[in-house]
Image (cartoon, rainbow, N blue to C red; front, side):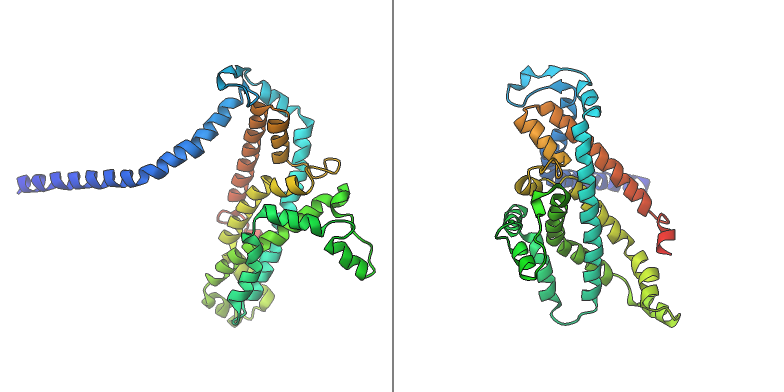
Length: 309
């Protein structure tokens, strides 16, 4: 009997080994992709922190300089000043996107007719290229013949300076990004709302809770995973903004819209300090990682209990 069991165990182990090998063969292309195009560049960026290379000369001319790039970065006032605009942009676009997207999702969640059409209309800007939309909005912001100023002039209101003044340039870019991304927030929140069981709302109604109390005590707590997702993704995207800045203002006027990624771009491709720009990128990565971890800890189970109550 024992011999029979031992004999049966051998082909089973062989079968399991064969299945494991088959699984690794199927996974090999994606593993190779991540190794070459994801983890490889990350390791190379970390290595460039301790070298001096302008990005144009042969790679073997890179000179080891230790932590000089890190020291220079810590004392780079322009780099840290760009974080102020970056954080302001991220906070405005993410908060506005969450608030407006959630409001639209709540409105559409109770609509039964033409829901698909309305979703498509709101989601359409999301699928349009940011480059094309930035060029279009630059025309809308044009001081003399732009549509926005034409409307303000028709209504008898003072025309806006939009991208021409430091006080309004960053807010004008935020308005474009909010318009473009609010449909994405709406769709994600709408999916979260559809996943909330109706029994929770029925129980709240039986307990006498009005619409506001149902929203605070049922909807918001049940949307915590969805809110965490949109905040993490939104903040990561906001801290890496580049296209609308490059197309609309190129960091101006008076550095009012200069953000971290645009500073990295200038450092690498205009000033040909490739290694130093890579150090900036690693610094931004560390900042994004710290903020993401903080968000995850804040939203973990019980982290926002007082807020939801």
